[in-house]
Length: 76
Image (cartoon, rainbow, N blue to C red; front, side):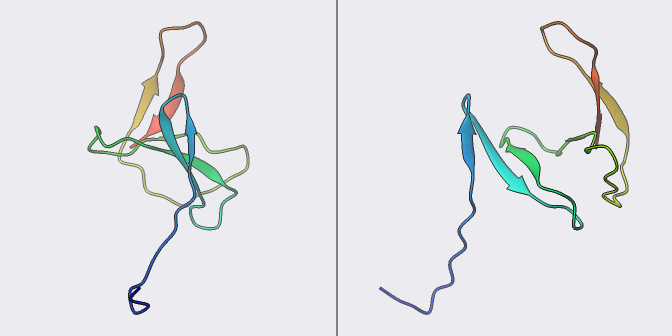
């Protein structure tokens, strides 16, 4: 084993075939990032109440699923 190589271990969870990586942005509480290799741009949903991530969003979009309920805001 070559000990001169650096290694990074990234914790993740598998939930319903989704790879979820817990992360923090600009000192925020832990957020869950869904790793999706099929998209070109990451989306963020509304952060928890009171969180200010200090990010510049390109635009806001509405996301809705096949089930019931109101759409949610997401940001590019």
